[in-house]
Length: 387
Ligand SMILES: [Zn+2]
Image 1 (tube, rainbow, N blue to C red):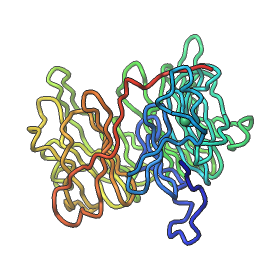
Image 2: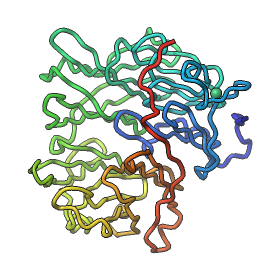
Image 3: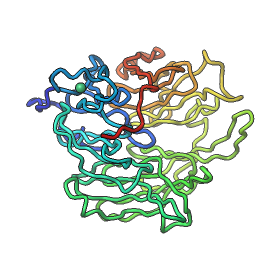
Image 4: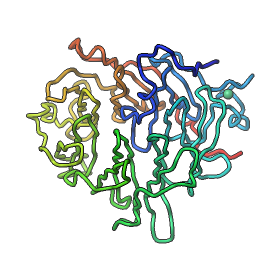
């Protein structure tokens, strides 16, 4: 297999579009899919896989002569160029891929830099331990979240360093300086010159706090204090939610939703007058530069019947622009994706399944059908290999 890593000369899409943080493919603890000028990369369990611009023709990203990739015997599988131990985050930057995975010489986390054809793997950073880890790239700098441990504290730290010089790392945020001593971060998002992240007490899992860092000055402030569950980053607004009530027995809850300015000031509470699907108990779970996505809930006493569950597509001014059928289980994740496709990742009981939704059909008014494009068995996923 050969992958062309050369840039198309008359490309209508500037390289910069791919090198910025791809919010539409972000999930908690890193991106599972990343877009390059030629197509998409994702992990088939442990194996880096390339798909074309329509999420078709998957190929394992390894040029090694006679390598049988997934078919290799277990003791040789780590020698495949496409193999990564417990891969958890993938980014594209200036013609290369950056992948967070187990460091092969120990249990710690590492960031690898690799060519688009899978060659030239180079470990550019090794974290101090094996706790939670994810990263993004902003104007030539890595911004990484890692957990640090000492006898009394588990602390969430965000550091920043030039891609080629981790020794210059400076701390942007330290959980040690807060009142929480068992802290974590589950998302780290960059939008233009701002970093947004949450900060969680891992003992309680409630009262999630949100912060933003101005990446031109490295100044951090807490924002959106009305929100304690999630925060979505749109082109001209933030949307957050607050949990009002929770019943673990029948798995129901009540949330409030708020719209904030990009710098985190409260603008209004959102109700079913803004997005009608909120009256069905739908949750707001995605935003891109054009649309806001709501989804019917799929479990608990308040869930509508399975055949009446949709993802809803709203314009920023609250008009319903379309609907997407849900994929039928209660374990999907919805990603707004890029301009062409939204992505749904689901687990069907035995396999992880990826679906694409063609956004060019939104204007047709038909209810959109997610199209399966990739699946793998996660039980073949190996958590740790050492050389
Ligand atoms: Zn191989």
